[in-house]
Length: 192
Image (cartoon, rainbow, N blue to C red; front, side):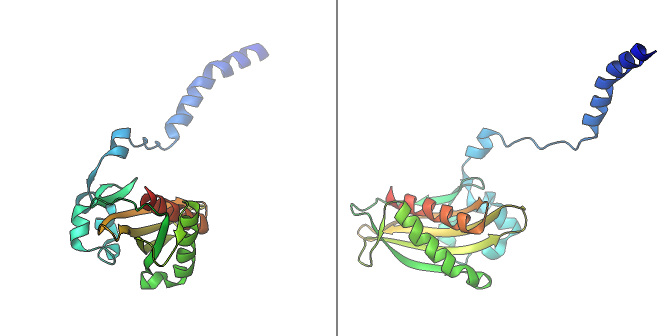
């Protein structure tokens, strides 16, 4: 009888496993590569335009928003024809936060300076490259163990008058790392 019970258990195991798998909630399919790489107009594509409109119009002008292209995974950019100057010096021209995020302004400023240093740039008040950035959002609760920020920023070559604009979100394990990672992305954009 013992051998028969074992045989019955072995025969029923795949059936039970199948029921267990059927009871699991379906996992969302990862975004296809073509969706991750798609380039679309910000005003038509960005979830922020629908779900967080309070972050729009706080730093960029309507003309810049109309020219931003990208997607929610990599951010949205617009390049007027920016060329990096020969010197590796930058000037933080404008750093601001939304009023509700004022308590993060010092950390944001520190991260921008540190991000510039990590990107091989040196702060200099007489630099030909201006950087401006605005902190639009901070999220430390929607994904436990993660923190994210939303920024708009520009880098401008004062000699040519041309700039690059970017709006993107950056998430990491904690807020300090998110600030530093976003600052590094921005500063590398100005160095290239």
